[in-house]
Image (cartoon, rainbow, N blue to C red; front, side, top):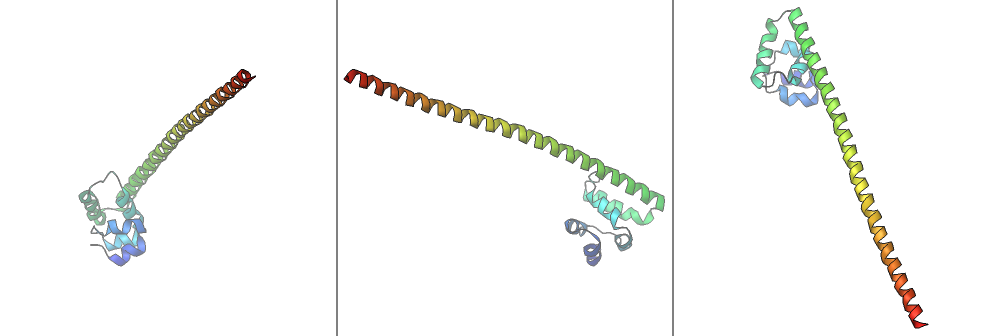
Length: 136
């Protein structure tokens, strides 16, 4: 397992528990925490075994390979963030649309209730007027 003090000092709070499940070379936690963060966040490496395999390969990679891995994982994160943003926008649009429909329905129902009360009141006034006329 990775050094707990390094994990606490180099990784964000939300990834510490996740990182504790892996054997991560201390030298990479110290010198390249960004690539560790990208691997932990990666959706393309979805199993624990895949991520651990990537951590195991880090010491064997040269600078170019590390740069390529970092670039690939950074682009993956950016694309996922874009997709998430679009999804949130769509979700907000749908929520707004259906909230407006619900508000319109509530408004229409209140209008109907007011019309019904007015009709009852008018009917009662007409009946009272008729009663007064019959008394005269």
